[in-house]
Image (cartoon, rainbow, N blue to C red; front, side, top):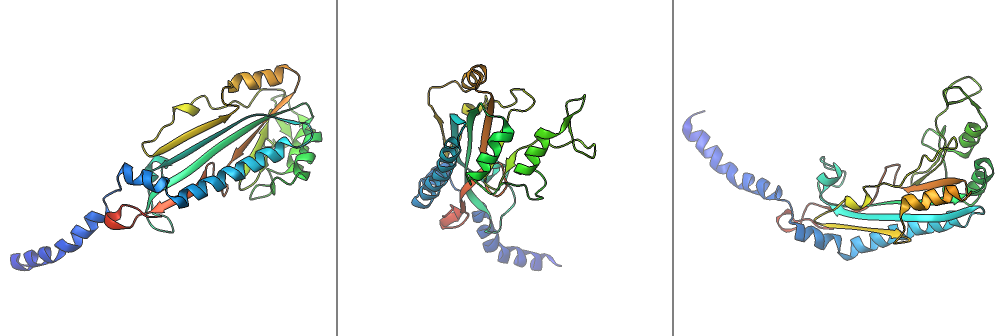
Length: 253
């Protein structure tokens, strides 16, 4: 390739390179805030909050269950903030909105008595993808199994059993095990922030979560249960995304 041919090819490639460079320009924080506050995002946010509140209320209505605390965090940011780097099925994303929520409850009931009531309440279709754990049957087997010297529960075949819990694509329920206060609210909950959008809300608002759980156990209310929300088996609820596009690649719903 001579110099003239190389120069001609380079000049012809400039428009395409300029277009590619413009597509790599990320939208500004101001633009992302506008996307996070647009009607589609607000509607999706409200729907996710209502889903969480319905399930919390349904569990609190189960006989023997007392609601202690609910925490909801709403976070909208660039995909990299959530460790998302590769394009998804709909293309490269400009904005991701996620909601994380945990609710805590107390009960005086034995788990083998309470768990069948929770399943009968129809909160979710409990069970892990392999349907071996995360079910009522597995939890009841765990609580009825022999306790080994090292603290593990053993199956009839002598195998260590996985800890019990009720799992579904949208939520997972855990409870204190082995007479131990194993569940603790996240102490770093209020330290998260974002230049795009971050809100957190606690009910009751002025309560100390650690003190609430400590008092519940001390007053003879027995076990603490923790209900964590998610979507499609993932730890957080991604309720809205905006993909790259629009003028200058600034993002569009």
